[in-house]
Image (cartoon, rainbow, N blue to C red; front, side):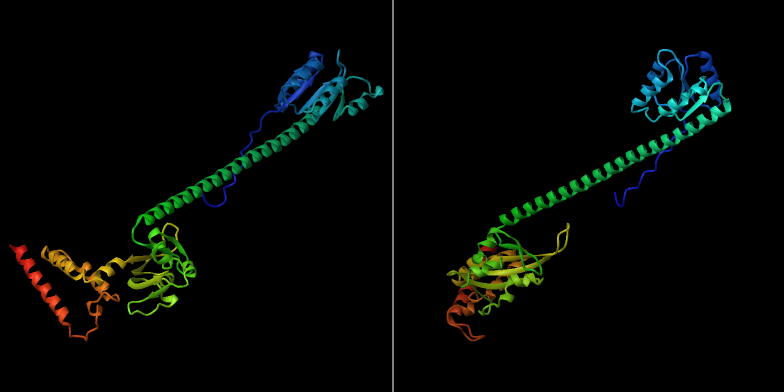
Length: 386
């Protein structure tokens, strides 16, 4: 649901007949009142005593009450006083009807009881209808305002309920998205933590390490995965393939923080008396699922491979394996490229093992090793081919 909610239109309130209460102890007077007010088309309710009139007031409201003054047991004034004491009927208009002479001034007492008018019998029917019609119209307008106010209040309550429900839905949707993101983060952390290869997620620009697995945290004292770890290891040294020290900005982590993409960058490290070799690679992860662009830094630990290669254990087994793969018709390109990268590291190239020799002039020992290697390879091929 988008935008501001549409405000409801108030329902049309139908015009219904209103109720008029006629109170007189004489049946003929009641018939005369009914005949006089019938043309107004309203609901006429009759009562032959004040007590009966009060019973009607317990069950319904009236637009106006026409009340005879002279009645047995409870006269019109006593009845009016009880009507005014009741909260719901306190504002109901009262019109007194009486045959008493004006000389006795009963109208003063009637007005004191809250009457809106005081008519002497016999009254003029047209005048009475005119007076009653005024109160009928006033009651209708008052009732219309009341119902419209009630309808408006109900519409506002419904609108508020809808807005509250929509807000609750948005909060719940956001909670589910946050929970999903947290679960994805936990899953990613678990996957990265289980990988044996050191990996770190780096925030471009700030260089902040978002996540590093256990293998990356334990490699080189964590200096290759966290900027903060460099401050804990003042003796840390990092060299390139040429043996030169790396400047801080040229290390793999700052390069990844700058958004650089690189592959198999050789790094020789020495931290706390320990040494090792890694091939660092950086790749860009695109924006997805609301996450910003992130750099993934891979640190392939080749310390053990370098140790093996430095003792001349690497050339013969790998060469034989490559020859076997070629004989099967399999692609040996990736393995060959890995060997080339490893041999480019300091101390891995046969030309750098032992004494340095001029280019194009192999030593006698190397020539002998090559001859032995060729002879063993020929013998291996003859055995394989039967």
